[in-house]
Image 1: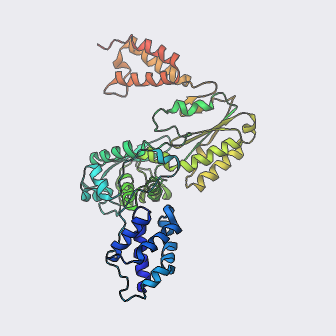
Image 2: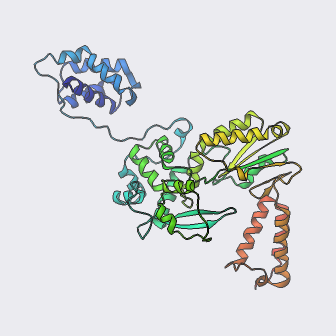
Image 3: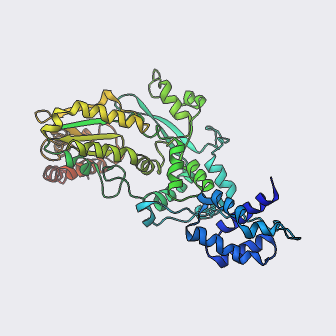
Length: 442
């Protein structure tokens, strides 16, 4: 590379490394060259006049070309003492500006891995160990950061990846101070303060048609690169974003998947499910995963909300449950709406589980997350009757006759179930609570 080009690049990097004023340009040029030749002051003013305060790293190529073509810079190479690089400016890592509404969010400034380690109260070595973005720790033994367990669900099993205590504390700090201040889309109602399954179902009450759809393997389908892109959008430099991603994602090797004992010995995961778990992904069981899933699904929510609005429908999402509802125009095109939803989800790298799609008309029992929404949010009648019978039998026959599942704290268990009914239907909840108060707990 020609000497003129090398010096021009060094001067360009010096100009990009601080405030954009003619005086600052001249001072940084003098520092880079180790002296202040007479041509530097006028040269710096010309650079400022050309680029002004708009100068940023995206214009580095144009700036280098401008410097090489400047008459003062070219004339300096005709002098007996030619310019040379005395100091090379290395721009320190800085937080990038956040776009749009994110600029108003108050987030910790963590420009370097050292800043991140100090903020978490750990050493940089411990930070690398917990992040483990190279996959060196492994996924078994005492050094592994997660405990694994297959948990049964309605159809099959899901793998719970629960972080151990120290990593869990780190993730909770990231959740509280980085993720929770970021607003999710208005359609997202899961895992958000002030939102619940009630706010999720309320827009769909009393509609002619309600359609429920499910996203398959929601958390494992969000890979580490998407999480990394989110942290860089929040302004964190590449090194910090990479470490934050490592702290919030996990990978499970095929060997580990074979070692985790399922409750059903005949259970086998599909090839696709196994591959999703083998690459770094959001672990189901980590405190940060719910908030990250809401933020990573922002484009999905934006597109589905716009789709629903275009046909006069309502749209809400609770984790992996999608709900759409509307009146007669929506009822007539509900099949086409479902096809568009599946196509958008696929483009956003999510997969709709078509076996769980349900279209419910006004004449049916319309249910979302176990709540009946035909007229208003309501508890299922059979569920209410079962709980009422348990409470009455506790009054008549004693609590021991009803604690068939051997709950360690049966009283708290019943209070929790009654509290849930109260949130859905206050009147029915009050009836159950009046029976509960008649139980003899002595």
